[in-house]
Length: 138
Length: 122
Image (tube, rainbow over all chains, first blue to last red; front, side, top):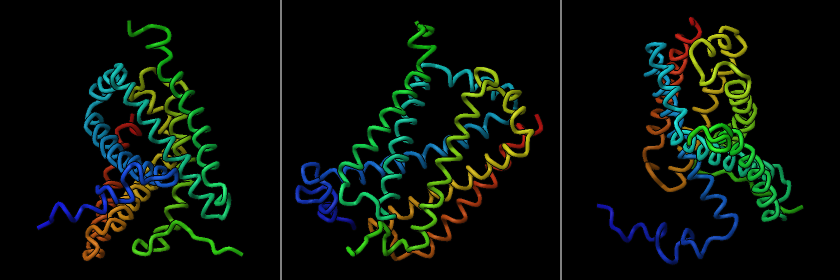
């Protein structure tokens, strides 16, 4: 039997994962793992939706109509956020592996997050252009 | 010279670390192409079977899609493996986990290859 106490290293107040114990690099690492696992789940969903809909052309076109509803566009936007964060933080990890920027690791993190924010902002305008900004949803 | 510490895990292994980096770089390129071609080069809004067919009847795009799927599956499942082993999950069943993930990955690759057939045929 697993005891609750055996998870103290993960959830306890003295755990390295307790929010006040985490510094920038640790937040970046936790975020990388969480978005990574989320994206694995997304790939399963992506394949399963496509395969169900590809049984007939009509069902595929209907699925695409459904995916144009506001709720799904919003979920697309969250997906973009997860992908861009994972990619930009991943680039930072690759840089460190090549020995670049380790001593300036916090600065590198925030530069990467700046680039990520710019891409996410661009994605916001692309995704919400017709619905929100041109008012098609209203 | 200061000792350089790479973000590899002793349990997951150096090859797992190396190919995770290689697939990461390829994914940025392939995913960028995938999103650009599917959503910015106009082929019917919303996407429809006819629009996708005009793309995947060209061999190049089939190669891009299948490479992307292969890299995604490797990167995703290898990442999951690293997370599990880092948290000491199933560490005593390492071989079994490895075989299980390879079987899952290959099965999903075959599944993904078949899923594209109706779009290739149009």
